[in-house]
Length: 124
Length: 107
Image (cartoon, rainbow over all chains, first blue to last red; front, side, top):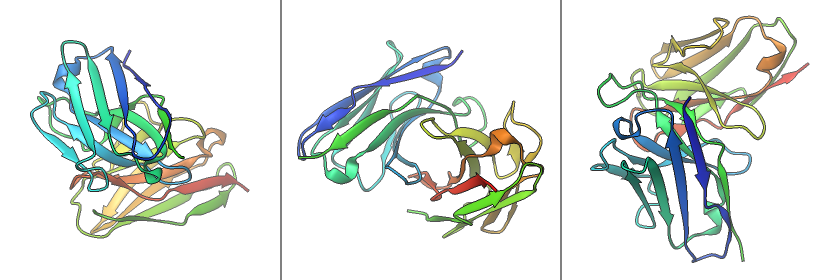
């Protein structure tokens, strides 16, 4: 079955860096676009970074552009998010999530599988 | 970013009730609208995609519809396991944005 397992969260001071990882299994990782979605306490989620199935195309929310970098290793079935210059407003649970359809299928514009999430807390 | 506004923010209902949640986009999103259910401490679960298509495995009491930039999620007969928070999400333009949520509570 499809599994997404995040790791790397924790408490970090403002201005510092953190790297999140997501280990994927149970599906053909190299054929799906992947997202990092964050959810601040009591708020709705927000997709902050998207990477295409082959890693060639990357998109970022304005709130993280220039500070966060999404990447993937299709040989290792892993997704990563490098977070630099962290701010208190980056505090959230971070999920990796898989789009519903592979790049060979018609897009559905939805996230079918999610990890359990990892908490990032930015505080001095 | 496209703003997604849900109403109501919370609703109290009883088992068997019909519940309707509305989501309005700040600009056109065509039919790139999904609905999710989230329970405390859990990741969101996909219910509806493309505004009205039921995700595999989701009970048929859930349905979605659209009218212009307004979208609706309907639960035809609320079940005990449906008490949760519901979110809409647009996928027309990145970043994919979600509404602020509608909490369905036990009356």
